[in-house]
Amino acid sequence: GIACPGGGEQTRMEEGEVFAIETFGTTGKGYVREVGECSHFALNPDPSGSVRKRVRLHEARQLAERIDKRFSTLPWCRRYLERGPKGESRYQLYLRNLVQAGVVEEYPPLCDIKGSYVAQYEHTIILKPTSKEIVSAGDDRGMDW
Image 1: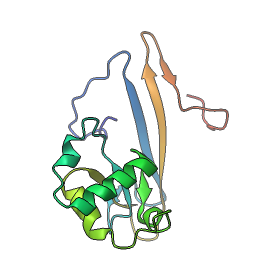
Image 2 (image 1 turned 90 degrees about the vertical axis):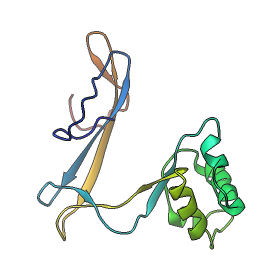
Image 3 (image 1 turned 120 degrees about the vertical axis):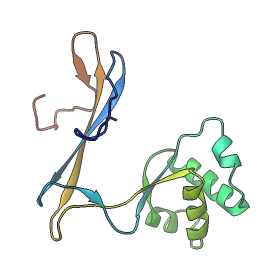
């Protein structure tokens, strides 16, 4: 993805590249920020396994393997671990270890002002020579790009 406008990002989009375009709608003032205890996580891609090998705690490496088998790099929340087939209960120390090692990425809640709601919208696009293709768009997309 590309950072928010005004964020100083100088990345240039090139033909053939694929991008996730994310926008955040809010009923508040329109300034979304990360607030509170993290509830959602995702395994960082690590094709060679080199990052996981740096994890010292054996139990943390085992947790990373279970996460990889169950979710791969899809996002998940704590209750998915707790209610899963293994019924993880004493995972918090090992999860913290995986986050600190860069194996798992945290995704904290997004908030605006108190009492408001925040929603994320996303489309995936491919840049073609003379156009773009919205590969995530279906009949239910509700908007004409």
